[in-house]
Length: 315
Ligand code: MN
Image (tube, rainbow, N blue to C red):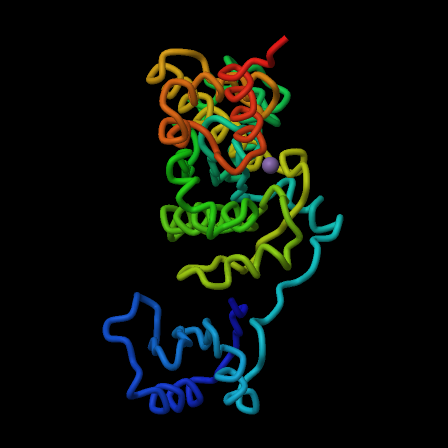
């Protein structure tokens, strides 16, 4: 399929476009949409912001029609946050976000955004809030309980079942970008009228990629968004987000283990292959898709294990 073309139009040009596509308008488009039209296999979605997305087989030629009156591609975000800016973040009121479960075959993908007002920084430091990778599972659960009562946060959890349904359309990075953006947006709404001084995402893809992946989202948070790897070292908001994500992941994995009747391992190693093979024997892919992220290589490895067990080599 042709990739979508994105233009930026002034209000006057938006109006012209709407008139031009009058005969092709789709009734009752989604909120924040100025109009939506379908013409010759191309869907044209114009947003109040001036962004116009052309998708479908004739997207390029249809967008070309407006090239002279518009700017192509959304305004690009500033590149990388420099070190001085990052140092400044340390003492500010920051909304941080992080995810867990992306590398585990079993269990959900969890994204969490957390807000740490600067006055809370000493308290969280005293509690021992830090990167979840440096904490035991037990400590993570305890800290998550405490954090929930201390700071505003927004958690989004994608179960394996839902993940598998989305996965053909969204690659892992796309899915994460959309979830981070959504969690941040929802938390900003909760915080209103208060506003963080900065938003810090634990970086999983270059900023440019991130913004490209969220460009079709209804609500896009683009202002004052910073990216850095090992974000938890720069602000406790990211550390808190990592703890809350990890706690939710562990809880969900424990629930799933209880449902199926045996422990589901975290990670994507040999143990995951073996457990998946057991599940395949019990209920095939129909059962496995409730518990595991099927696009991982573990699925094939488990299928091979099952084939070997059912058909042992003749000696
Ligand atoms: Mn991370």
